[in-house]
Image (cartoon, rainbow, N blue to C red; front, side):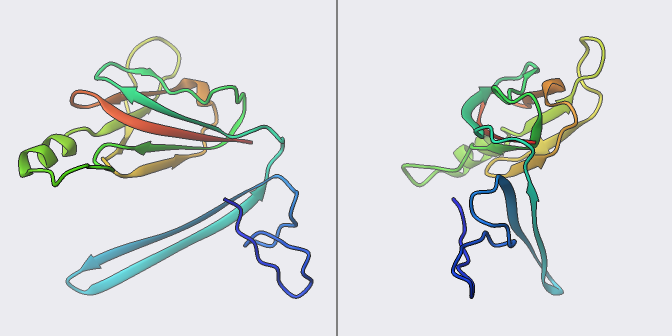
Length: 160
């Protein structure tokens, strides 16, 4: 989705001021924390010009308990890669407490595999219904797995 701000000139620009037609990545995030002391809010907005005009890559995948490559599709250079854990996003019924507990166990681990074929020593977690944005230096070295069973996820990659 492209957000437009017609502004005074009427020429059209994205929310960060880039002219329409230029290849750009724009991110708008707001984080809220509700605690005993009240609500804290953290806003993060940024935009950058992309180096190429390649199409973004989006695929729905599944991860099991074994490490597997995290694909960025046809993109050789990735400017942003987002992994969204799709577990628990849609229920056609009111889930029981047991079903919710099983979904909560389907945490994804995203790691970086260096030289050698061993498992990554460090990794990031993606809990059900959450997303993890990354700017990897080498997207081809990313691997993914599910801590317990199998989890459906969506990967979205934008060119550099």
